[in-house]
Image 1 (cartoon, rainbow, N blue to C red):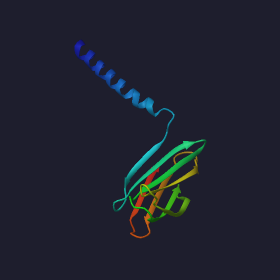
Image 2: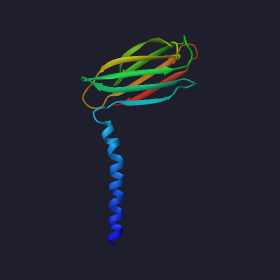
Image 3: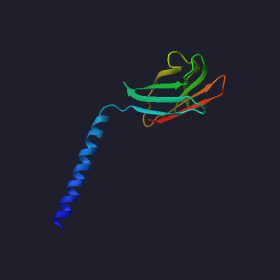
Image 4: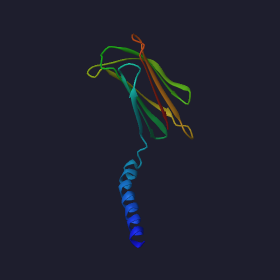
Length: 129
């Protein structure tokens, strides 16, 4: 019985030690990054982190083709924070939109979307922060 208890305690201690570096690595950095695929072959990435009481937000779409135009919208809690046209650029065939948004009390929902003007391909990203 003592051997079983000792083994269980040793296993629990090993598990906690393995998880400790992961918890510490997050530290003060509360950045959230999500990425995914659009409706065709393009990919998207949405990054959000708090900075000086605001939300530093970056939405990137990578199409791997230069010169393609996209209609882009970024919303925070349903309110439009950015709306405009972006064009993919060399060398990667991508574009990004960076905005500093108000950080309201509680959870914020950031929704970024893009639609290719020529092909109609769509991208949609969501982060609850």
